[in-house]
Image (tube, rainbow, N blue to C red; front, side, top):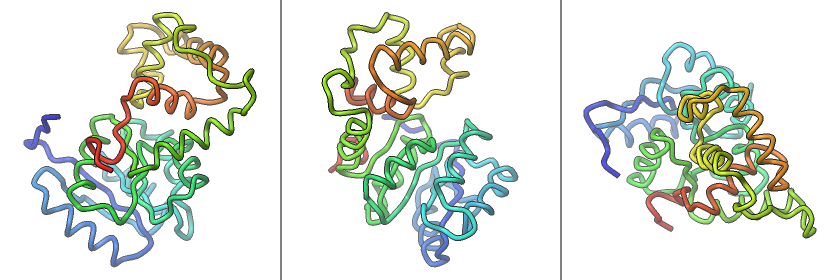
Amino acid sequence: MKIDESAKIRLLIVDDQSLIRQGLKAMLEQERDLQVVGDAENGKIALEMVAQLQPDVVLMDLRMPEMDGRTATKQIVENFPHIKVLVLSTFDDDTSLAGAMRAGAKGYLLKDMPSSELANAIRFGHYGYTQFGPGLFDKLLAKETSAAGSSENSSPAKLSELTAREQEVLNLIGVGATNREIAQKLYITEGTVKTHVTSILNRLNLKNRSQLAIYANSVNHKSVEGVMGNG
């Protein structure tokens, strides 16, 4: 994927440990197309800084005082849908992973990943591609499939059961598009998009948008696990 390095990607780093924030800033600013515009020690401060600074991407820790990363992610995505949130955590348990993605995170990465891979994940996340650390997509898929139910009647139906328009909507959900973005892309109203989403959920026996995104990525291979297939 060709990256336009003439326009820097503006980053906000959110972590309760000052040393980690400083280290990430020093590391990421070695990349000529990345710019750290601010950092915050908890989700509450992060919300204030997002409103003020309007970063392109937020690197979000999960476990913090005042306001945790999942809550902050949900509020950022709801109020600033153009801003991408990438969770950067030391925890790889399926509960934390699923919770972050349901909150609207554009990806889930681990703090021990190499700096070059983190930089690439930020770039891909900024351009709309969902990012996962090695092995995390499979873990999330297993978690969401289990949540949907293990019986044959509750398992996802085949993609072929969707109409052509529903498949277009599903593909766009898979790359993280909002209802508004889908409406603009397909030249339909947001109300029509919502109707399609409801229909897709019913046809595929899925419960929520998070499961739709995971399903779309699993059948279309549009999710990038790790970065560009690493791991």
